[in-house]
Image (cartoon, rainbow, N blue to C red; front, side, top):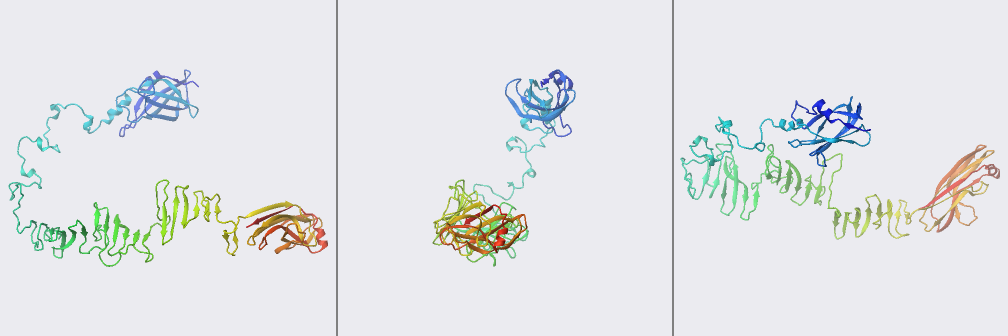
Length: 568
């Protein structure tokens, strides 16, 4: 269908573009109204449109995204839709290219020529200029007339170099500024003439005992505040001690020491109980930041993890190193006295544990050593197989689920056993050992009718035994019937050496006294396991006997049979 774009009609009908959402903060969406015709006839129906923005009447320089509007209703050629090209309208001239198709059908037909945008979308930029404007949106110089009445009362961050005359009153200065009219001397050597004597420089309030200090100290008057002292002094051994109050505000509790080697010693009075101070429980330690609860504590009081290290995040213990060397993540107790590393995950309904990770192609492993070396690994150099090593690789699991044991490191089946054929194998609970893979044989046929003597009554299949440890599972069946009705048929699994005409050896108790009505065939079958056979080739199958010749003669309407044997 030929689609015709009636450009002049667009301009006459609707003014083309209208910004939407006028009652809210201005966005970048606007509406478009147009008239669509087919071979000069106005159309009615549902159509799909694409809208693209270009910075030229022709050429590929598209700006912003392609807007696709599906299922736009058109009535007598008239349609209205909206579009959003983002913040593109900065004053640059743009042209709109429109594609149209019947709703959901085929490709889009591009209408030509592109349509120059009218000024309406550019009002989006003007609409955004509302309230305070940043300096980046202003250029030029403001005339003095528009600044009339400005007295500087609202100025902030005024550089002192801009003050060229006048006097700043003391009341306008910060309380942190030292004033020249106070009892102070500011020279090259700053001398404070208050309580300076005996080689000590002391800043203090009232009632502070300074007899313990022989050097520089800073003190807080316990009688005037909350009873905290924050002093430091040189104790004669080139050590810098930090003190807080004890008892009545006397600086006798040294809580931190910086020794002459640069070592920092915390909690010198052993008051920490193994937690960080979170505002509700007393604690001490090395913390980071304010109020987030990351740090290290060492319990100094008796009990628990005394003299160990406890690592915290969010004021919760995450890892501990006990004084005996045990490392616990999520727990502080050992399962046994010989345990040196332990994990605890608090989850109750999903996995909890540990991953060991390497880069792609690496071999993350977990190892053991007590004079003999063993480990488990994920071998990134060999198809990411999981392997177990104990003086050799003895077990592997591939990423597809194949398991290799006995040194078979390239399993091609779900269970692939390596080792020496005829020697290595699988041991069963009854003590038997299977050293070769199971083999099977199958046969079908009519066989013979039952007689009064023991004989095979169905087809047989041959099996070859190579070891007395091998066993044979035989499953056989045959449809047996009679035209007159028959009874007293005994069925067994039997075997005999291949080529022999002797009666077959019967296995197990069999199924005795089988009967059928006249004109009926009934499928009958048995399974049995033959064990302890000497090496050789044997015929196996369904054997049976009728109690009498008369009984045997009645089993005269028999059918095909089947036999399967598996050696394992």
